[in-house]
Amino acid sequence: METILILAHTETDGSLAKPALEAIAAGKSLGSFSVGLIGADTQKAANQIAGCGAAKFLAVTGTDFAQPRYATDTAAAEAIAKAAAATMIIVPHTSRWGRVAAGVAARLSGRADTHVTGVTANSITRWYYRQRMEAQMTRTQRPWVIALDPGCVAPIECAAGTAATTTVSVTAVSRTQVTGVKAPEASQQTIRPDAKLLFVAGAGWTKKQADSKTHVPEAAELILGFLNASKASLGSSKSLVDLSGEGQAVLPFMSHLNQIGQTGSTPRHPKGLSTCCHGEEPHTVGWRFVNERRAISLDPNCGWARGKADVLYVADSFAVMRKVNALLAGK
Image 1 (tube, rainbow, N blue to C red):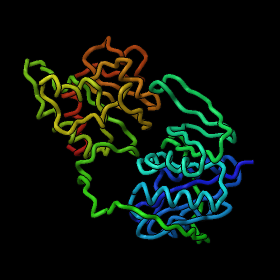
Image 2 (image 1 turned 135 degrees about the vertical axis):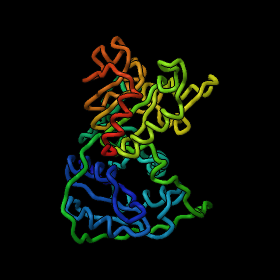
Image 3 (image 1 turned 180 degrees about the horizontal axis):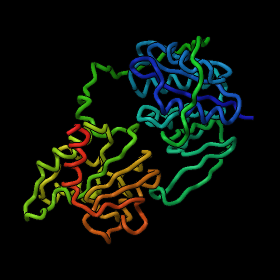
Image 4 (image 1 turned 90 degrees about the vertical axis):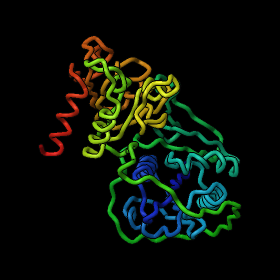
């Protein structure tokens, strides 16, 4: 019988983010489990999930564990795993845990699997070849560290309360000193994993329009205006993010981090709206987990019209988004 441990790190305000709550839900579905928390102060996080049904709460706390660092995170995770005598360790595949999952497994003489999309009592599922093939795998090596991709499991819903935590002592030696955090303003953030809508811009925004001229500044204004008003997440087709290498005009806020598709990301937003894209297979493979797909294109025979979109608007994206932004502004 497996001894299940869910590891999570606290956010800057001491709470647990959605990926952590998803990992706890996945662990609870397997049976009895314990929760390990890492952060500057973990009591708020423990109280947040007091009613989750965990057999016990283990914690490594202190200012050394507030910031993500390989040395401190691996030491804390190793100490909690040994204290819990865990044979199956589930972590949310955030950037912080993705950096250390394999290292934790190595320290415990175990094995690690990342980008996992489903967990059962004795197997995991994950996608290969850009979500074209799904594999089910088992391992005999223990402990087994499993990094669960965000968005694959509904987050746990439980009552808050006062949780009794057991502090695990650990001495972490690190040569890295965190001196501060630099982050863009909220209005400049275009990638929003928790947004209800994914807005994808294609290369058509930077091409010549009906007047035989390009309107890149207006395109940027329309797209950013919509993102700020709707709080949607921004995606892009490969052709758009690669335009700079071809010497063509580009949208200044677009990078390869926004790329959706075979060579980009595969988001899991409830709804998606594609604009000025052709709906070609390499791009639309990234929409596999988007529940409702709509597209705006002037070409009625594009890939979106061939069963890849639930609704296709044959229209000019510039005109449509001008009207949409006006409606969002209450004009």
